[in-house]
Each structure stands twice: as structure tokens, then as C-alpha cells.
Image (tube, rainbow, N blue to C red; front, side, top):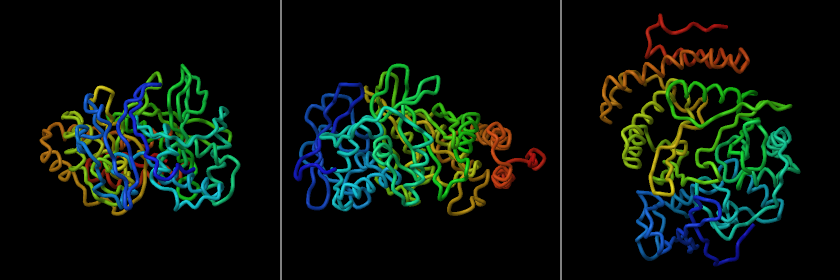
Length: 418
């Protein structure tokens, strides 16, 4: 699980199978990780980030916020295993008798190798044996065992299929076809399959049927006009699992470069360091598109009204294609969640002021607010399609209706239909 001391790590873009575009090299220093661009990258219309140093920059570049990003610049730290993925690496290190604290940032990037988000790949890669057979029920059970501190024989498969997964919920990277057949998807997938992420329940924090709840929210978000990847609710023998198609992967195993807002601005995602005004400005800066600003505004309205309190800078991302064009990534990780504050201080006036600051027309802002409010008001209709427990529906619907009371006339808000 470790690369030889002093060995630099090569960084490349892998937009298409078998084709690598050298980006540069990473090397450890006494205090952090230095980066040096590959001279040939300046000849292409590709950048790690419009906010990062230009590919024409020569010499060594050093991170500006190293303590919060494991000694790396944010664009590379985005590839690191996080939360669930980090726990898997920790458990694997323990099994192999390697102190987790001895793993450097380069070791961890080498473990990620070609299995990380987006198009960045790292070499040399610390590889693992491939496992073709995927048993979702067994993996879900093994994930719960790990979260409960138990040993599981499926650790290596979970670690490999977990990639550099973030978030508290266990997840695996798979390939899936139209018939619902599943194969390993941490690398390339066979013809007829596309890349998906399947999430399992976190036994400590999630409701019993969290997969169905996230499927409900995905349907609501689409109905409310938010760009979303395709989603499925997979019926297993031991539970139901939420699956979403990866937006950083395209047909033919092609890839898009992906980076989160937190990594772009090098702010710690677990702290309240950014607001939606910042995200809308960033959307304009990254894409040059007012439509992207409108999409981020709609996302803000939805997350507030749908009571998504676990909304932070790592849950908003941008994508770059092999021609160097940037777009706002679809919305993801949308679900009902509690968090700091109640949101009771957010009113229609708050949204209207935010729109005015960003140059969004008052009429357009009002249309977005009304469209999203109407969809969230129908939460029970969306949820009943997945047969969620009535106790769960009542609790969530009660919070949603309380929030909607600040945006819709009382006569319009639906009484709880239970």
C-alpha cells in the first residue's frame, strides 16, 4: 500500500481509454506536496482549473492551503478517499499491518490510481485483484459490519469498488446495463453497460429505507427542473439500494475532468465557508453561462424547501471535457436531512434578494420559487410511489409543510394525506 520513498507520482488526464494526456508530477517535500506541470500540457486547451496556475507556469508549485487538503492543492486532494473511502483504506492498512498514519498523500493517490472521480489518474498505481461477481446484498451487509467495527471478508472488494468515495454512506462503483445486470465498474465497463454508483445504508445515521427516500428526492428534483443524472431503486433480497448514473463518465468509458467547489476554492467542505451567492458567482466564473447561474439558484431554492441541511461545498461540482469546456455538474446527494439551524429565517424575500444580487430577473426568480414550491408540496405523492413507511412520511412532510408556509398561501399547502 506504499510507493517507494522519493518516487514522484505522475498525473495524467484519461479522457478516453488507452489515451493519457500528461498533466505533471507530484513530489513530497518536508511539509507538503509540490507539483510541476508537464511542458506539453501548455500546448492543449486544458487546465486543471481556471482558478489554478496556468499550464505554462514553470518550476515547482506549492499548495496554498495545505493543512486542510493533506498537503495537496485542492485539485488533487479532490481525488483522495474521503469519509467512507478513507475508512476502507484505514481498515485495509490495519489488515496489512501498515500504520495508517504512515500513508502519505502520494500513497493514497497511488491507491486511487485510475479509480478516482473525473479524468485525473495517477501512476504508479497500487492495484488490487479484480472481482467480477457482484452481490449487492452481501456487500451491503459487509458495509454495515465494517461500520459497526467488525471484520468482513469483503473488505478488499469494498475497498476496490469504493474508489475514492466520499460521504458517510457506503457505496460501490459498478457498471449496469438496461436490464439491471451489475458488474465491477471501478475501471472500464463492457459494451452495453454504463457507470453507476450504488449506495447502501449507514446503520448509524440513516433511516431503514434511505435508498427509497433518496430516490424520492431525485424524482422531486427532476420535476422541479434540476438537472439530474439517471437514477434507479434496486430491489435486493435484504433491502433497497439507491443507484445513480455517474455524470463524470460517458459512453465508451470516456471521462470528464471533475472538481468540487470546495476543491476549486480550497475551502474545507465540512465547515460553513460558502453560501449560494458564492456558488452562483463561481458557476458564472467557471462556465461563463447565465443558465448555470439559474440552475444553481434553482438548486438553492430546492435544498432550502426540501429540507436538505447536509448541503456543503463538496456537493457541488464542475466538469471539463477533452476540449477544455466547463459545465456545472448535475445536482447530486439530495435528500431530507437535518443540520445546524432550522432555516426559519429564510423567506421569499431572501430568495428575491439573492436573485437581484446575481442579476436574475424578478419574474424568473418568482417562477423558479413557485415551480419548486409546487413540487415539494407534492412530496407525499412522490414518496408513496416507493411505499415509504407512513411514520417517515409524516415526519418529513411535517417539516416540509412548515417551511412551505413561508412561501405559499395556507390554502394551497396540502394537508398531510395519511
